[in-house]
Amino acid sequence: MIPELFRVGSFAISPFGVMMVLAFLSAYYQLRWGLLRSGAGTDDDASSLVFAGGVGGIVGAKAYYAMLYGDWQLLFARSGLVWYGGFVLAVVAIVWTVRRRSLAPWPTIDAASLGLALGYAVGRVGCFLVGDDYGVPTDLPWGVAFPHGLPETTAGVLRDSFAVDIPASIPDSQLMAVHPTQLYETLAALVIWGFGVAYFRRRPGIGRTSVWVIG
Image 1 (cartoon, one colour):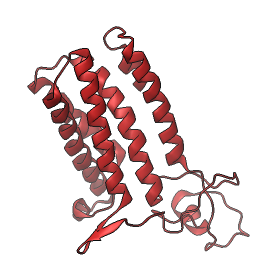
Image 2: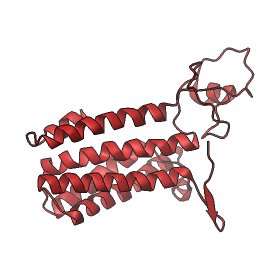
Image 3: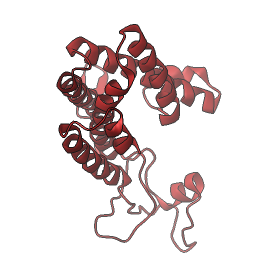
């Protein structure tokens, strides 16, 4: 786990933040390519959609996190993003942008689904680097221990926070290797993205690419 990459004054730059920026950039360039190739939109349309999705996603994820814990001060905390809230508000923001810019819905969704898959793959690397969203304990050789994860993968944390059934003989302080589910999801998203791009290049019927990628 890498707590931070560098500091600008007292402000720490984390690998998660860097990967989030890279995720949005990769999603933008993929969306731009898809819109231009299909004739469904322009550079400006792609940037507007990514901006709407980014702002809506972050605000929605923070709002859901604050509601989950009943503390609105968490809106201003650096940590704490819940996927469900981000997804809902991002969809609302993107639908509004599509309507405002008079974009054809299905061709836009086809292009956006490819950007979503690529952006998700890149973003999940950030989760791995900070030790967030990992899986259950494993003895497999590629298991990873996160001594400074969010939270750390000690036996006590896994028992208390995630109700993992760990033998009582293992002390709470023992660090345990877990499945790097973040990397599993990155690999799966890259495979989906790769097949999706290949399918999109064949110019299938409108809506088929998004059904294949999202479905």
